[in-house]
Amino acid sequence: MSDDVIKGILTAQNGRDFLLADDGARYFEDEKIWSGYLRHFSGMHVCARRLTQKDYDTGRPIVILWPEESAPPAPFVELYFNERLVKYPTSVLGHLAVNVNGEIFNFSHKINENEAMKHEEYFFRPALGEFAPHPVTGRDNHDDPEKPYYDKFGRLFMRNIHTLKIAGLDTQKLSRFLHGRLEIIYDTPPDPKRPADYRDFGIFTRNCATFIRDGFRDLGYKKISGVFPRELFVNVAYFFLKQNSDPSIKISFSTLKQLSVPEAAPSALPPLVNPVNRWKGRILNKI
Image (cartoon, rainbow, N blue to C red; front, side, top):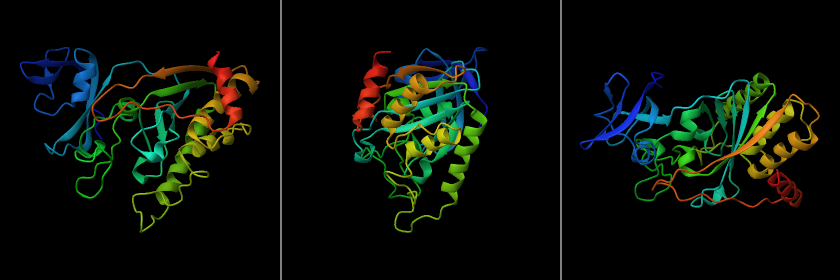
């Protein structure tokens, strides 16, 4: 991927879309700029760069745009609970990812969704090329190996995302642990019957939440429990708020609202399965 970041105002003028830089230069005027960006970011100061993935219509590198914002000072950890995607039954319990010093770790039953990526790719990938849903089915579709549709564009365009920020953890150790788990996944031979899936994925044993849970346990927080995404999110928040005795660890909450686009229906908040976690959730809601 290209790391050449260009900054400017996302501009629509005389039927042309482009990035207007501070020096007056126009960028990406002859390239496709995703309609979702134009819907939400027109007139805003944004960052942009080209990705290695290609747009299927033009054959040119996909352009990713994202709002210019300052990153939190390192070291930090942000836990992201993503509400469920209503069109996918496998998403019924939502999804969990974790940001460690600006590197976001994502685990999934799909091999290509097990990745460590930059902030802008996780939140703001455009629904173009392989990131888009299939134009006919509106879902992921890999029938054409030359033009797969993974339906994994920017998560903020797909879901509401509940965020737990944690300061004071050993981020280097957590990062090493999570990278190690990704290496195990990449080194696992595929199942010939389901080559796109992670062979050892398990709903109760190896899922998006359990890898992250085991990372916290590797840091020494053995009391942190949870198998499903929202359950673990609540347990981590409750632990560091009510059970942890280390005053150097601070937490805060926020919610990132879904940015509506035609490619994604509004997300939905799944219920907490464990009654104990429902009780913990009510306590956290009062804070």
